[in-house]
Amino acid sequence: MGGNVSPATHNSIGHQRGQISVDGDAQTNQTVLYNTINASASTDIYTDGTSSQISVPSDSAMGFEIHLVALQTAGSGDASFRRYEGLIKNTGTTVIVGTVTEFIVAQDSELIRVDVTASSGILRVTVTELLGASPIKVSAFVRFTQTLF
Image (cartoon, rainbow, N blue to C red; front, side, top):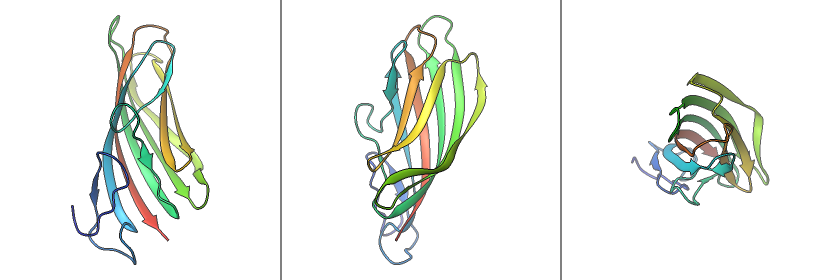
């Protein structure tokens, strides 16, 4: 949407009204990450459910906001809604700037642990099932704003 959009993420929607100097240097994108997390396991969530993650272009900074919902698929059907905010940059090395802020909006129990990290040019979201029970379905809406130099 908009002109000169340069989405680097599979299944994302990008918006750029103009540019500072090059395509993609002033834009916002949104995407959905999802996966099933097995009992007592740690698993990344992806834009295609299996392998595609959010790319962080070289020489860029991206502010991000993640809204994540988890639902236990059997047993008590426990659920959790969390929000994460932070800044990631790739200026030769991909790093999280400062600390990712976590907001636990609502949850039945301590169902999951979520780690938002930087890894080799990607924004990585890893979910760990904590109850040792049934699988958990996880879906996350991610919105990020980026600039390039």
